[in-house]
Image (tube, rainbow, N blue to C red; front, side):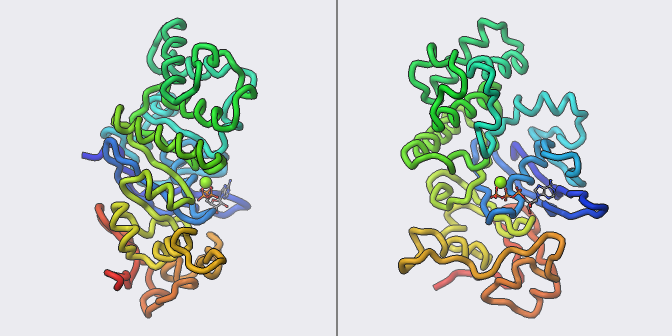
Length: 321
Ligand SMILES: Nc1ncnc2c1ncn2[C@@H]1O[C@H](COP(=O)(O)OP(=O)(O)OP(=O)(O)O)[C@@H](O)[C@H]1O
Ligand SMILES: [Mg+2]
């Protein structure tokens, strides 16, 4: 059975008197120890979908609508706020897109990690400090017994990112949501952080949702991939199938745009722009940019039905020669 089940999750923004759907009925499962890559262009709703499932939306004008989010069988959308707070930072950890804005600059790194350990595991101050040192060691901070008393500004960018992971791991989560965990880092540090996440999966059976723009990172790290376009999932499957035989023309376009696969000197891009969410085209949302549009595409919104390998396209690509 899957550890996390997200079913028909929508996130709605209420601005200037009307509703706009930012995330539209997204469903996926995550098994224990699975790493799922959530990919898609900027603005496709990756962050909102994950913040929605954690019920951690960044503004009061945003709300989660309908659906269910089950973590080990418990429906998170049905919990009261106090119980939800225990799950967040407990069973469910998050690494945010920008670590600097989520570490408290006035609080020592060690206290920020220990706070979660005390809160979620009921550890004493001394125990929590010892555990915090151990977590810092696990994320590869040198000399953690000394470093634990540093403030965030005394850490480099890569170390702050590790500290952010340490804060999330301090509570021993079952599921970690990592929003662009390596985008701002140089290549060496990026590789170290990815290795760390893989190692945590292997040792602790941690399940991870990894949000990223970088299909190279996905290819190195993930087991499965979910592709978002204009607020909807358009394809979901195993990494190998999806990268080798993409079924959705948008997925194929994303793969063709990667530096490693893009031929010629200039990097290829998918022609056109994603639609505005309050002015969506009829039918499939990708149809204005799709290279192989058919009659159904402007008439019906294709569904991403069922679980397992799925594609929301009326004319999936099949096996390409
Ligand atoms: N407070 C808000 N009110 C209304 N719309 C919002 C609000 N915050 C974000 N959005 C919109 O929600 C959509 C999804 O944004 P989201 O941040 O989830 O995208 P993303 O896929 O994570 O992009 P990126 O790769 O750039 O991080 C975007 O169209 C964005 O403009
Ligand atoms: Mg984002």
